[in-house]
Each structure stands twice: as structure tokens, then as C-alpha cells.
Image: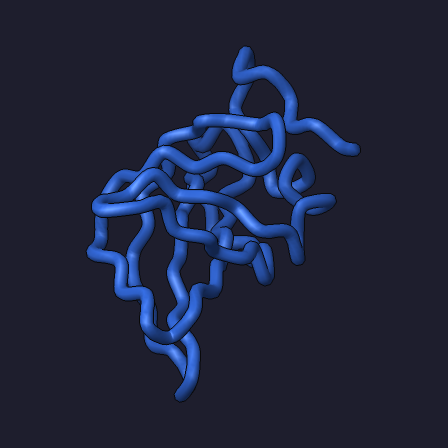
Length: 102
């Protein structure tokens, strides 16, 4: 099993690559929610940035509706990592969320 590194440095898109397709658990009320990491997308970065910017895209069941906000995210033994999720335009039958790392 691949473990994300300890947070003694900024995480990169490469750190998350082995986790694409895996289920993550969000701490939410009234109960935890499962979301799947479906892709990693590079973003345009500033020349002053300390790392290459990227976005993580997650999918949830259609009946799950998360409000934009900060969630404690876990996957296996990794976590919690606080991640800000924002709902994005979704195709029928699913819900998509984005977490931006810049």
C-alpha cells in the first residue's frame, strides 16, 4: 500500500497519483461521506509558486451534496488532511468536487 508522505513539505500532484481511483472518507455531518479521487489536473502556476499548482477532482454518489468548505479527508492510514472542496459542474447522475493546490 502506498502512503502519502508526512506533511513536512508541500504535497505535489505526483504524491496523489497512486491514489487516483481510490475512495477517500470526509468527516461531515451527520455522517462521514465517501468520495472517489477521479483525476489530477495541472493548473497554471505563478513563477513565484513553491510547487506546480494542481487540482484534485473527486466524485460522489448523486444523492450526496457537499457544501463548499474545509473537510478532514482520510484514505486508508493516511489522514486526516484538511482539504477545501468546491462543487463543480457535474454530468447527470454524479456530483463532482475540486480541491485546488497552488
